[in-house]
Image (tube, rainbow, N blue to C red; front, side, top):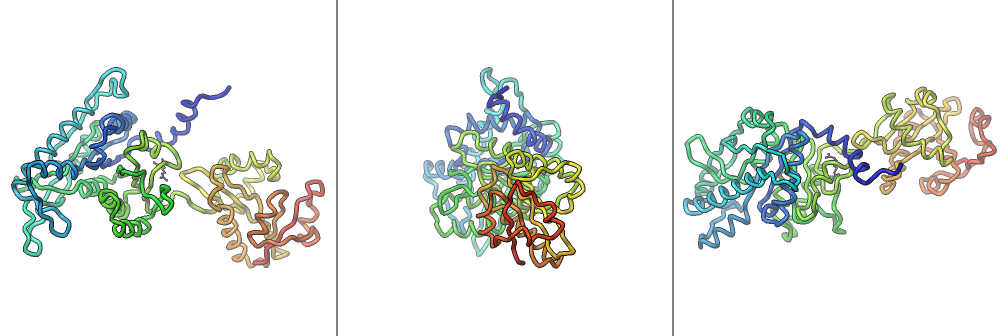
Amino acid sequence: MRTTKLVDGFRQSAPYVNAHSGKTFVIMLGGEAISQPTFYKDIINDIALLNCIGIKIVLVFGARPQFNEALIESGIVSEYHKRIRVTDDETFSRIKQVAGALQLDITARLSMSLSNTPMQGAEINVVSGNFVIAQPLGVVDGVDYCHSGRVRRIDVDGINRQLENNSIVLLGPIAASVTGESFNLTAEEVATQVAIKLGAEKMIGFSEVNGILDENADTIAELTPSAAKLKVNELVKQKSTHSSTIAFLNAAIAACKSGVPRCHLVGYELNGAMLQELFSRDGIGTQICAEASEKLRAAQISDIGGILDLIRPLEEKGLLVRRSREQLEMEIDHFVLIERDGLVIGCAALYPFAEDNVGEFSCLAVHHEYRDADRGALLLDAVVKEAKKQKYDKIFALTTQSIHWFLEQGFQLANVEDLPQQKQQLYNYQRRSKVLELVI
Ligand code: ARG
């Protein structure tokens, strides 16, 4: 029976429902995202949905554009020193009003429970409080920052208690200090510190465009902290980009370096982008993570199921020679593979013919959805390295349909007689594979 789109999608997302449930996500809601008409409708509903499936959520909202607008309206001109706002009394009293109003609005929206909306029956508890303790930035170069501050300490136990009860913790850019005053912080700093101290699984942010773009304006799927740093420098030079994107990137770099496994940036104008990012293997936005999500490694017994899933379709098409599970079990040490979030997306093997000082490069397969980047060449590289370690003079391969690919990789056509004796005996004259070899 044909499956419906819903069934397909539901099945595909299931591994991530499992992976994410019970984990802590810090979601950074920048002021720009909040000011979008879609925010209160789509993004808030999607956050409620994450809460429903047992993800522990800390929301941190920022309000830079809202502050700026309110200050202009009130005729207050903010002073800046080293690109940080000096929050004097007049400024502070105005921005407290704005931040307070936003907190109430977001809380109200998360409390909504109208029928015919995705929030029907959700009954979410939203908790705000003095979970973040601030301290003043103080006087720098003779400039008193007044009520501008930074994070001093985070009440990790207090937040965790709320999260255990399935409440959403809502934090803003203003926090109290031990002296009974309050201070203006950046939401990015609050989000980063909270994510690090809570040991969060993810920090998620929203940007005007969908994540970070490359020179062709395509979204970059994955950045390491060092690649993200280069991108920050580039964006700072261009000046055209939203400073919030730069602020999030910097926050993500800091979070990753302090052990938050993955940070994600998605577009706020793309309806459902956060869900697509979280519940699909490839996501949709930019992921910043210390460890690449694709790993090339030696295969183990537990990978056999994954390898079989990958090679069976190719065997059925006659592109690979059929291998039984038992055979694979015995030969598993010859295999290398590329794994992406638990899925085997590529494999190859090096069969030893030690007496002849050669190896056979065999069973090369790449998942059909991942054929764009040259993962085949990556697997060949790994096999060549291993062959060199074994001190082989060359490797050979048999192929019926990928001759050009092998030639491109530097292989040359050879004859059946060039194969090791043992292999010649097994050569299938009906299959008539071409013999190729690569001197290493
Ligand atoms: N859904 C997965 C996760 O939440 C993978 C996302 C991959 N995203 C990307 N932009 N490469 O961790």
